[in-house]
Each structure stands twice: as structure tokens, then as C-alpha cells.
Amino acid sequence: MQPQIIAAIIVSSIAFFSVFVITPFLIKALEKRNSVVKDYHRKGGAMVARPGGPSIIAGILISGIVLYAFFPKTEIVAILTTTALAFFVGLVDDKKVMGGWFKPLALAATAIPILLLGVYDSDLSFPLFGDVKIPLLYLGVVVIMISITGNTINSIDVLNGVASGFMVIAGSALTISLIILQNYEVAIASLVLVFTSLAFYKYHKFPSKIFPGDSGALTLGAMYGAIAIVGQVEVVAAIALGPAIINSFLFLSSMKRIVEHREIKAKPVSLTEDFKLKATSDKDASVTLVRLILAGGRPLTEKEIGYVIFRLTIFSGILAIITAFMMEISL
Amino acid sequence: MSGSSIFVFIFAMWILIIIGGGISVLILAPIEISGYSEFDLIISSAIKAVVSIGLVITWIFILSKVKNWIFSSQLKV
Image (cartoon, rainbow over all chains, first blue to last red; front, side, top):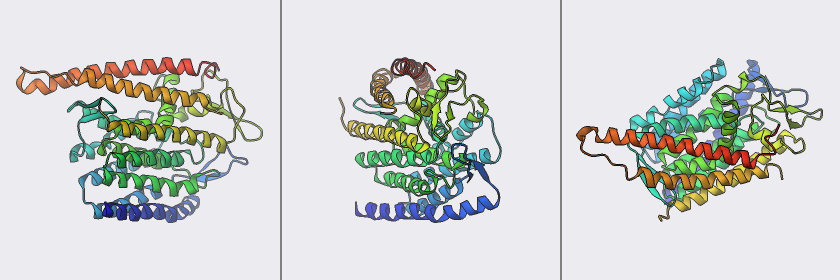
């Protein structure tokens, strides 16, 4: 147990400080290249650097390689490779606007290293009821899981600090669950995700100095999905993602098709004169988590909405941890 | 509190996942096909895939109903 604790402290520190140090340089470089976007929700419409994906992937890969030096396991290689591929998918979407189907399909392809390296168990575990053997069907689960986690994190990246803050909380719940289930090496990989997100949150929180972009959001989401598969905690991971899944579910059930947010003209929320957000009454606008939070209530600031989402994520995280305990019980 | 009904929805979704998981184990686990030699695995997987898709569609349908019930006032926009 002692080597795992030492590795956890070292790897977490490297993940945090590498992103913490690299991100300011990335912000300067992006601003110099005029790679900035307008933050419409902020007074004066500040220009914010984008994408932050490069510093996120740098932190993940540097600390991931150190983790591999401690525990040379194929599982870690699979997680890092899938995450790196997802970063490139996001980078393509950052550079060139792709269609609504591009990200789900390209992200599905990033699951190939997990399949080729065979670092999965085709028995899907459920709390209280045990496992179900789905040898061929599980291949589909692997592919769909990465695509879903990547896209759900990307779809919740709508406000300052939400995607990175959300990942800190959901990733922490996943780490605790992996420790409960005694999957220590994958739990340390999950710590990499938590501390990378935490360091990035420092610059992403309101008022943002940098946005993660598709390259950042897909990197975080795909890594989360890869950890869930390799760590055999698919159901627990899905529960911890609760608010993001609800956001995607509401969006898809209101739009009834897979479509890019930027393709929809009608906006789900609008800005008041004092720069607060309120739900619109436009019937053509999508139903989203933010719109639901604001519906029927007073307008809220971006920061206040972010905290509501974090409270919802903490609640989902607690349910995920309870589920991990329930995995140990069989009826 | 803002989003209080969303907490209820997350809890309902969690219960549905636990129950759905139980039903999946009870229905899918016993499906074993034999007598088709090398095709046994493919046939049983195909049947499991069809049943799983049916279960997922049912799960989404129930979740939609729960969503409409919990958010009835908010969704009237």
C-alpha cells in the first residue's frame, strides 16, 4: 500500500503543478496569436484565450508517464493513448468547425487502444445484482462509453469554470469509488484527472482567463471514460456524471437529433441588463441544464449557476460512492 | 433552492439505474445459446444486444416520463 501512496502524492503533484505552470504560458501564446473568443456573458465582452487543451494534455501525459514508471501496466498506456487521441479529435474541432456527427464518431474511434490492448473486462458489474457476461456486446459499450463521456463533458462546458470544476468533483468521486473497490493503480490515474482539472480550474473559473475548448473538454471526458472502463466502474462513473448526462439527455430529447450547439439559432438563456442569465421562453430553443436551473426562478449570475451545477455534481458524486459500496454487496 | 427539482431527478435517475441494472442481470445473464458450435457466442451476443437495446429504449422512455413529471412547471416555456 505504501508504494501506491507515494506514487499518488508524486503523480498528483506533477499533474497539478505542470498544468499550473504551463497554462499561463499557453494563455500568453494564444493571445499573441489572437486565438481568443468573446465571452458574451461578461460585462464588456472580454476576449478569452482558447483552447486550453494543450496544457491539459501536457499535464496528463507528463504525470501519466511518471505513473507508468511506478507501475508499468498496459492499463495506464491504454488510458493515456485514448486520452491523447481524444485531444487530437478536439483540436481538429477547435481549428475547423466540424458537423454534429464528427465528435461522436471520432471519439468512438479513440477507444481502439483500449480494445487492442485488451484492458477491459467484458463482465459488466451492477450494484446489488452482480455481473452480466456480455463478451461481444461489451465492445460496443467501450466504444459508446468514450463517445458519451467526451461529449457530455463538452456539452456542459458552457459557463466559466464549469467543465473543469465539474471534472474535479466527478473525478474525485470516481477516485474514491476505485479505492473502495481496491483498484489502486487506476485510482491514481484518476487522481491525475482530478489534479489536472483542479490546476486548470484556477485559470478557467469565473472570470475565465482561458477556455478549455473542444480539445480540453474532450480530453477530460475521454480520460474519465477510459478510467471507467479500465477500472471496471462503468455504472459508478455514469452516476457521478449525473448533471452532465441530464444536460445531454434534456438537449437531445428537446432537439430530437444530434446537432452542434452552435448550429441552433434559438438560445436557451438570455442576458439581463445587469449581466445575469435568465431562461428564455423561446419554444425553438433547446432545453438544457442551465435553462432548467433558471426556469421559474430569478436571474442568476454565471458564478451562481456554476455553484448550483457543482452542488448537483457533489450530490451525484455521493450517490456514485454509495453505489461503489453497493458493488460489494450481492443480493 | 435553485435546481431543487434537479436533485429529485438525479435521485430518480439513480434509482432507475439500480433497478435497470438488476433487470439487466436477471434477464441477460441466463441467456446462453448452445448447439450451434462456433456460432453459439455470436447468436447469444446478438440476442443479448437486441434485449439490451430494448431495455435501454424502455429506460429512456421511463426517464422521459419522470422528467416530464418532475419538471412539468419548468418545461412549460
